[in-house]
Length: 143
Image (cartoon, rainbow, N blue to C red; front, side, top):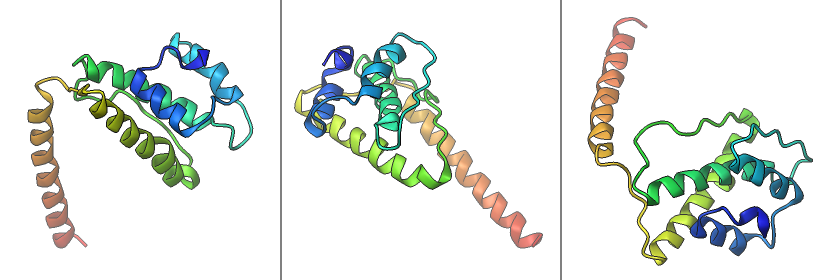
């Protein structure tokens, strides 16, 4: 599984528990993506293109988190056609994240964020709630 060699053990373990091997598009894409190359994956529907992109990004985040270097900021932007969005999130994001988190916990490895993350999230939540209340009040006064 040469394509998976650079993946974090928890990510690699999750993948191999769910799939017998990378598909050809995944096997070709992952080394290029890991080298930081701009990579276009052109392959038929169902060949694992989306998981190739998601899992590579998740792997980078897992490495940063386990090293305590994952800041509370946007690291990945993924654009999905609306028709595929629900499937992409459930199958290619939520399921891998849940399984990888279980693998990290089983190995006694914690995924850590930087120490400023919690305060930033709390502050952003306060701003968000205030903005929502302000927008609701504006809507009531200006239908």
